[in-house]
Image: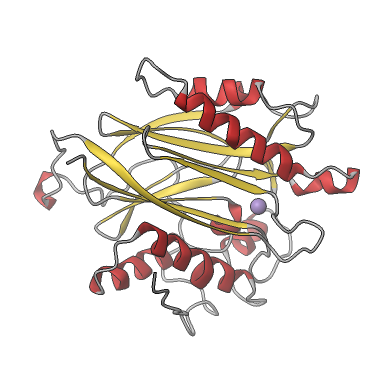
Length: 292
Ligand SMILES: [Mn+2]
């Protein structure tokens, strides 16, 4: 795979053109029939790719994020082990990895063909024994509708014709304290999860990530990036995930002066934070295409 290194020079030092978060609802720009994006009768599938970039930490070379892609069941998921556990000598990455592994197994064991992310998350949670806690977002495509379940501040955006069409809402108690699944008394249970369905159409691009992505990259930047990729005819989801992780999220995270989504959220919470946020970065990209 040829990887193109492209950095958006000069883009990250200023406030993006538009940075309003579009949470939990379809955008007004959602194509209607007049846009030529009719709801298809044909069956759709997801073509997926992912890139994981743990932050530089010799003590935790694989970081605290985890993800899975289940091609047969059209399902993807991410989890982000909560870093605060390190103070207690617990690697929450273990919890996140076990949770995603168990989610993958639970999806394979769904034999009745019904996409039920809640059941998957429940089973994954009950089978996860590790100490720690983690956010989790699992999305499954069924009958041309994306079913998802989310706990915490991981999440996804759907881009349609290179425009943001949907963004999943995050759950947090207060700034930088997301809802989190875990076995401890203070942790959340799957019953706290947000569950939603979103119709999708061929050509949609789902960008799922942990807060290493979402705290560093605005939807408008991904829109610009996808426009450029479309011009160049680049459709490989692995390439898109790599480029979004490295050229946008990693690059922005290292910018000490940018008005990042994290800096904006801090400002809204009356906290001080300037620049990007160094973190593990997970990006899963799923293209919605016809089954045949
Ligand atoms: Mn994170």
